[in-house]
Length: 491
Figure 1: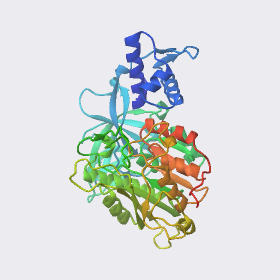
Figure 2 (figure 1 turned 180 degrees about the vertical axis):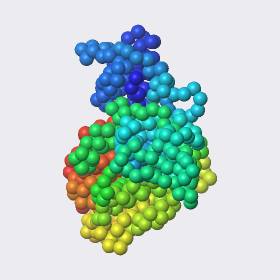
Figure 3 (figure 1 turned 90 degrees about the horizontal axis):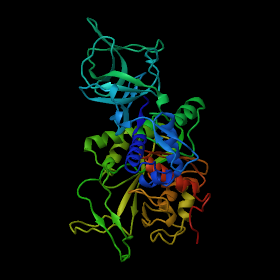
Figure 4 (figure 1 turned 90 degrees about the vertical axis):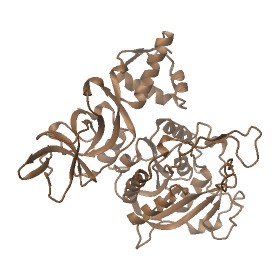
């Protein structure tokens, strides 16, 4: 039996439940409505995949032509913790995804997790780049077992374990790779043993065709596409020095405290109507975990930036200090700290502190000595928009930007993200820090504002977003984008 991704299992479970209750299957429109998606094409693709995997049968001539073939209740969800190197060790990473696997593959005792394989050092054991391995968590292994090993509490690798009087060896299953010998001054921690392999044809990989064919075979970037998946995993697959501008809106790590909601039925001026405090699981990590997360994605961001490129990272006091420290740790020179002032900031209902009315943007580059990053000084000086009460035409643009947090109706017409940035902010960044035709990367794309701003500004884009729901919203927005919009309003 072939495994299912988390979203595929959710759709199967909904169809199974619907048929049990009503005696007939739901339509594609009803499935779309249940999952609050804006596009039928996404649902159609999932149904096709479930049919190809043998879980569903469908009759395209009937509105309710879906029927069940296999029981997804025979599957169990396990965490997909990230990527493991079947090659040279890579930094250990953990993510928050999950996949569904047959119960028959899971032992009755012990914890089991999955890892996606990167590299080809284990091909003679039928473990190839892109496959997923099921791992039983344990700290000991016998000679010959395939293990997940952590070296010096930092680098992770997948190899065969051998130990004798001379010491410990981690053997590849490919003659093109060298044995790793654990030296006396090195620490080795066994994280688990491999139970089984899920071949990449089982579609566990996120967009395998996109990255395998476009990057590895054609040596080109996945231009003008939104990739559904984990940011760090996909950043690692992009070539060195391939991106002109990164506009990153990472989790701020601020989803702590109580849920707060405010509904302004009367349309109180300046408050922007109904709003709520975003409380999201992806935005709530222990401090050390958030610091490590920031190190991982920013290290990859630095690697893929061109010497002429730069990066801007959104933040607040919750995370801006950490991003600043990571910039300096990685050798990313800070060009400016920009304050985005929002006149229509959310109200402070508790009355126990000043009303937060700004966010920050850290702008950095990697070529510290030569400083070849692009900046359109002339356009920044000439810029004028009556909505910005601080900027005067012909005067230098300062590091405080007066940009209301309002969004045009078309920006939220197809759905929205809880931390969605307005196009006006994204377009200003892209216009001043990149040139027409440049590649703009949004590693936390959300509802796609950065990508939409890039498209409407004559740039190319790449977006990465973990949640398929927001990928669908972003793609729908991009389909209705207005090409070559004027960057700035002129007097």
